[in-house]
Every structure is written in structure tokens, then in C-alpha cells.
Image: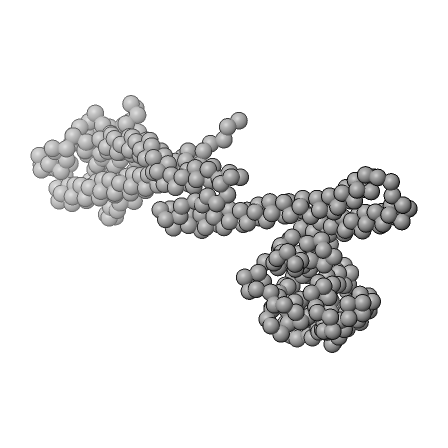
Length: 462
């Protein structure tokens, strides 16, 4: 089932909010108007009843009511909604105006000489369903007789007024609902246009156009962070794709070299009959190339596993000096053959994966031995601070140009044809070092000048 669009949802919410606001506001206004009309009618009824009581109580007998009829019925004359009736104690009608409104029933009488208040107003309904409001009271005359008076008002005109007001509110609310839905839809659709533009720009990003960026100059401020985040993501994807393409190309090139060497050597050996020693030399050469391929595959697999977020390291506390000394002893034979000395000056404890630590230091030491002139010394130092532990492998030799330093840890990156950036000639040694440091939350850096080239491994504190 197709879901509602964001535009339709927001327009619906606008319409519902409009109905709620108009409904609550209209209900409050309607209630206030009804209360004001009721209060005004009660006030008029009380005032008329008080005046009737005052005028009637000044008369000496029930006959005086008939004689002063015009004076009394002037209280309600001119308003067809008001009605008036005065009866003597025997039930004879002495004065009556608009008798058609009468259907009094049992009304609680306000006894003389009590004052009449608004809460004395009562409500009832006529036989034909009309609403009546009025006051019934007894009035004492001058001769001591008592008459019964009723002053009331028929409320159909008020009910019609309130009904018209209520119908107007309903119609206004309905129109507001339709207008809010239509205008809200247009407003939201117009406001969401920058999002559609962003989606359109993102649709143009392809493998061949990874340099495409989403324009941010005309987007609303609320969307600037989104556009910046998307552009940053595209930039990272572009860099990652370029690195992957370069990595694939370099890997294919480096795999092709040993394979070509083995094939060439084998073809030459098979071109004519050879002695056993010559065949043996070819096999030895092929085994060396196979070892090179094995190291390369192993390094690639390690980098692939390390890039997985679920890769787990096993950290433990160990002596930095002891582990560096073990690595140095392992390379001691190679260093002696090359006429290079290895000096270790290290101290402190480190919490890290021991195997990965040894591999990182081994890669740096092998790289240093490869480019250190005969008769020189490679130094390995380590010291701990409050910021962690820093391990430095330094070797004298030809300095590395500054423009290459930032890329030395890239996979298969080479400064030139004579200096490889990796241990074991696989082109991945320094890339592995950087990956190991990232797994520990640390960093790897390099400095190079005429005196020496120094590789630094910075392990953060535990």
C-alpha cells in the first residue's frame, strides 16, 4: 500500500490544527456569547419584575391593577418576546400581555417582601417546545391582599441568533479546513522544493561523476547541514573509490610481476635442455617469487580483515622494551649481513595487542634496514608520557621529499622506483602499520630530513 507523501501529511496536519483552533476558539466565543445573552436577559427580567413589584405594591387593591393597566403593561409593551400576567388570590386574571406565551407550570414563587435576584429566574418549555424564562412572585397590596405576578420572556429569537452564530462557525470552520488543506499543501510543496533539488542533484552522482557536488548556495539554512553532510560523504566516497581503484591497479601490477618472473624463468629453462643445477636455480627462483606472492596475499587479507568493524584485537599489558628487543634480535642477522647496527632505547608499559605491536615495529624496522647505508645505525626508541606511549624508528639515509610524506602510508604508494614504502617488497608494509595504529586508536606519522627519517607510532593512554 502506498504511503502518504510528506507534503500530504503536513497539509493534513495543518488542516487538523486549523479545525482544532477554529473549533476551540469558536466554541469559546459561542459559549461566551450565550452566557452574555443569558445574563442580559436575566438582568432585563429581574429589572422588569422589580419595577412591576414596586408599581403594583403602591396600589391599594386588586381593582387598582385594572385601573392602572396601561401603566403596568408599559413595562413589556413594544417587545413581543416579553409576556406578563397578574392574578388575584382566587386565580382571576387582572392583567395579561402576550398570553400565547404562557405555559407556566409549577414555578417557584418569590415571596414578598423579599428582593428579586438573577438566580430567581427560572426556565421551562411551552407545549410546542418553545423555551421560556421568567420570574413568578407574590406582591402585597395596600389593603393587605396578595396578587400573583409572572414576568417572562420567550427565547426563540435568542435561540435563532445563537443557531445562526453556530451555523456560521461551522461554515467558517469547514471553509478554513479546506483552505488550510489547499494552502498548506501548496506551502509545503513549495517549501520542500529544495529537497527535491537536492534529490535531483544526488541522482546525477554516478561512478563516473563522483566529483559531483550538491549546490549549497541557495538552500535554506535548515538544510545547509544536510547538504554539507552529503557533500562530505560524496568526498569521502570519491577518495575511497580512487584509493580502491588505485589499490586494485597496484595489486594487479604487483601480482603480475612475480607471476611474469616465474613464467619467464620457466620458459627459458624449457627452451633447451638444462643441467640439474640450472633447473634447481629456476626452482629456487620460483620459490622466492611464490614466497613474495604469499606475503602479498597475507598482507592483503590482513588489511581486508582489519577494515571489518567486527575485527577484534586482544590487548594486554606488556613491557615495551622487552617486545622491541625481541623484534631487534629477530632482525639482528639481516642487520649484520648489511653492516648495520640496531640500537634500542625503550622503557615503559603499554596496553595493546602484542602480536600487532610486533608486526608494526617489524615492518618499520625492515623498511629502515632496507634504506640505511652500510656502517650506519638504526635506532628504536620508546617513551611514555601522560598522552600515551610513542615508539620511534629512525634511520639515516636519503631524505624523503616533503610532498611524499603525507602519502607514505597509502597502500602500494611509492616515492620512486628505487624506494619502496613497504616491508618485504609487498608494497603494503606501511599501510599495515597505519591500520594497526587505527585499530588501537592511535596514529602513525613520519618525518624526514638530511639527518634521518623517523617513523613515529603514538599509542593513546589506556
